[in-house]
Length: 205
Image 1 (cartoon, rainbow, N blue to C red):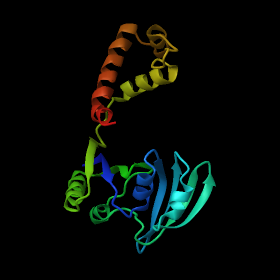
Image 2: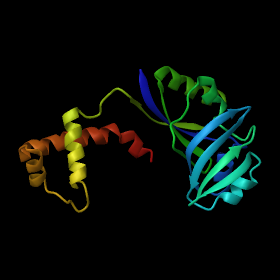
Image 3: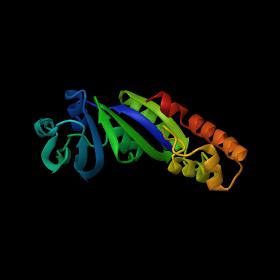
Image 4: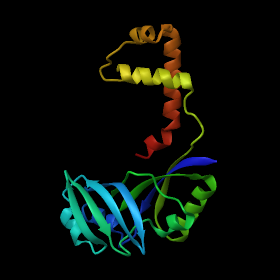
């Protein structure tokens, strides 16, 4: 059964994005796209919260840095400069893009089977790579029913959850064509599901 697995991993010394982010503790690298080219090489497109061009150019794992403007860069990764770490290649999983790297830690989300998730955690442990399992969630389990999703989307778009609220419960109920008491009960169930469904993510942020 397929699931979403979110893991934070400490990138090893020598990995270009791990090293660059460790050298600038306030930096957040957002890796928008990465592509392996074989022989340990690759390319990546990224954006950064701080001026990072000099640090990228100075890293031996980077062959070339091209500025795309507005703190966005394209980089060519040298052989051994650090693409996807060995446990990912062993298990055969690829993280979803974009993902972020800060202070040497990368935040990866995978769509994989439960067997692959367990194997990945095992390989990370065997390799001695520090990691934290943040959350797992089944891909095919709907957090909300179709009708609940419609109500929730309408509430969000209408500004019910804005501060201050842009629409009252009474007006939202009239807009949806349902009784105020029915809407109130529905929103309570929706909010409970959403909060419980993302409890672990919220606690770990």
